[in-house]
Image (cartoon, rainbow, N blue to C red; front, side, top):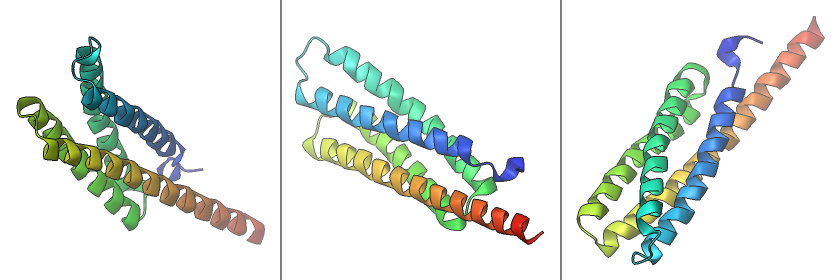
Length: 142
């Protein structure tokens, strides 16, 4: 199979990103729920580090999608990347000014990112199956 059509690396990165995002959401709820806990600074730092590394991961997905994916998948990854950047901005804003609306927006954006990554992974799997089916049909015709 040609390297340009290999989507398994992107699928693996997407699954790792989705798993990391679930951990992010759980950490975020712990940090938001109990700020007075002695573990709160550690959890907050962990939440920030994972979140910032998530930007790099989604940027990789966007860059990779522009070489091998369909237009719909490119669009989903691009929207996800924009929401991730907004998520980072909201997170840093919450650190400076604690506001309930900002916290709710931050949580909602995290769930939206999870949904978009899930949709992207489903579209990626569908595209991969379609490519494999067309390749097997071409081989059978020869």
